[in-house]
Image (cartoon, rainbow, N blue to C red; front, side, top):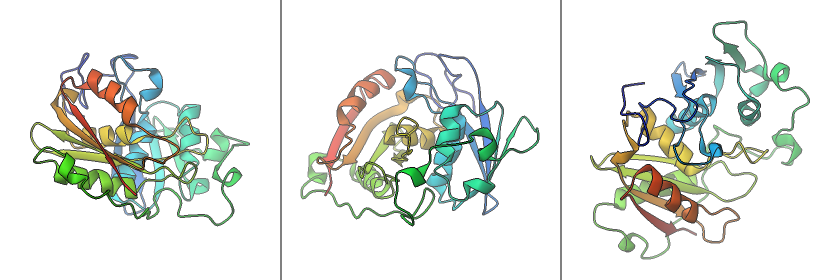
Length: 259
């Protein structure tokens, strides 16, 4: 991670503002790509809005199109939250998990008698996480006309990530794109967990993308475009309004509907 401003308005380079406990992780993809991860904490927000380093690695794998993770190395033993989140990965039975260079563990050792996707989904339902997803969403007519000038690309990025969302449990895809004062765009979609609570919402994954791409402070976020179906079981708009007011005062949230 690069340097950052830290403190209340910290971003990708800041120390975790609540715990002050740094966690680092790295994943090895089947392509040979190395995927880095760190923990993210949001000052002023409930603790469940934090992103764990292992989740960061997995969201990073989704972001770059990695098909499978072979290994995850972590600087601290994965918590139960992260162990549960890993059950969504394809080939998870073969995934090797190491802590501080110690011997590799299988997830079955770290999470025996687990509750997994097979407990909720019919056999053969797919694709799993890291597979190719396309929900076929389209923006409602005139949606782009609601936006201030210069946000069309941001909206298209949010739509793209909504369509790529992994939502086998709620059928509620959504995408969020953050546009910074520099014009850079960082976007993400939903990554669900069969246990629900470890689910990463689009703000989580967009912040992962921003951190991975070097954002130093959340204050740099100027606009956020959320794309979701108004009929979905899970909606994000009202919650994001509150969070973004805390992360980046002055950030404008634009909610677009898709069908």
